[in-house]
Length: 275
Length: 214
Image (tube, rainbow over all chains, first blue to last red; front, side, top):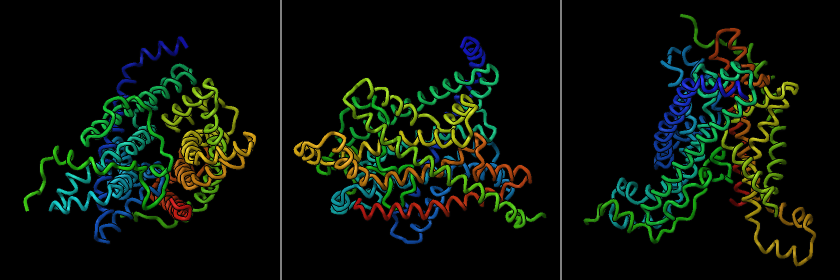
């Protein structure tokens, strides 16, 4: 224990930069995944069967093959085809983004589908354009329902980042293994590593809870900041992880349709009201 | 210019990959059994009257499901050097997913109507019988699709076992690729095998979901 602590304080700088790499991989992957989730999710809702088909194929492909295999394919196999991704970290971020973007697309699609029909009809009755309808009425409500499953996916992504150590990236897991071989303190090194991941996961959960409170407050709902310190929500359907197909995605809480629109539209300005 | 895709090499690798796939399947099945049983045990423990049991179980579940399974595998692997990698792999993967499944069971148990408990009390069924004959059959039936989703997810996490030298499919792919300095064929085939296996399974779960009226 003593030698472990002294080695730990010596290699503090390395662990700090490893932490930065892990966070970079997580955040970079999450941003790419978020963008892809919205693009693919909205494509999967398109009226055009070709657009839907393309989205579904991409989603099912990246959900159906293992992230591990995807990352190794990008890192080892893609260069053979003549595309070398410049850094291993970028490779990992792309793999995370594609994989979790596909899962996220199902969340986006499920949440938009779960916005009550009357909200769509109300927006049409107000003569909003499809874009206004989506931006001012549908998405603000769907977004609230997306955050808890997104939180689950984000933690899932964080928990996948040790894969980076397998493609030569000096992330936290890599540094912990260095620490282990330097001290011979196997149990302490891994326990330390697990605790660091746990803390990171809890910090991400706190941020996502705060985001959810803000999104709810914008709809005139919610309990303010009280709920922020709760743990990550469970996903009792397994859908955000598993490979359940169409209709999968998210546990949507029933949205109280009535008290929503006025607030939403008040915040967003009166959309296309003029007839 | 050398040809990019080598069919001969792919043909050589296929038997190895399929051999690895059998290990992958075996690991998925054993880990699923561990997860399904242990998940139920954890869910029940979280409902006992004794706070001294509930609190540590809850802490354990939160910790395990918030930390990477790959690190858990490494940790257990180096702490228990005497056990076979396969045993460690399926146990750790099983425990990791048990924490997820315990939440599934919890939702299922909470979803059994209160009247069922009251009826069991009115019939003065003993506690064990109430669980076995009344509550669990309904709860488990309702969560079957969710358990199925987690099993599929676990299947796609089995490549992690390669890091503790379990000879599953991705381990074979990596070794073969390293021996021949050609990774394209093996990893493409490994991805295809995963897709071929997991897509129909997810269709099955989807049908189960429909039939149970979700």
